[in-house]
Image (cartoon, rainbow, N blue to C red; front, top):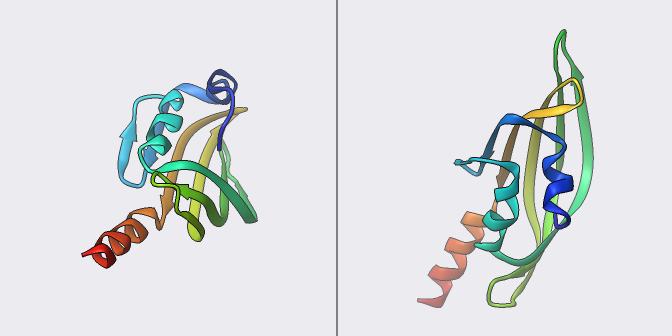
Length: 113
């Protein structure tokens, strides 16, 4: 979830589509900046990988939970996520990310009222 942005970007096709919980990112280099709007730090506990092979592409899905700290330093865990990658050759051409962060953040805001 953190690391060398150039090394991460090298895995993506130049025109890769990246959709993070409904928001389109222009490039893989924006992943860290997006996460910085929600978390002080975040990591994944991966439960499983699923791989499906097609004629011209491979689809890889990662399922698990997120843990870390919200921006205010409050720890969290058990935040479900699904990442879906479409690869053509050795490059990611599409990445879709879903997780429960927005729902959890809304619950925290409602509890503070």
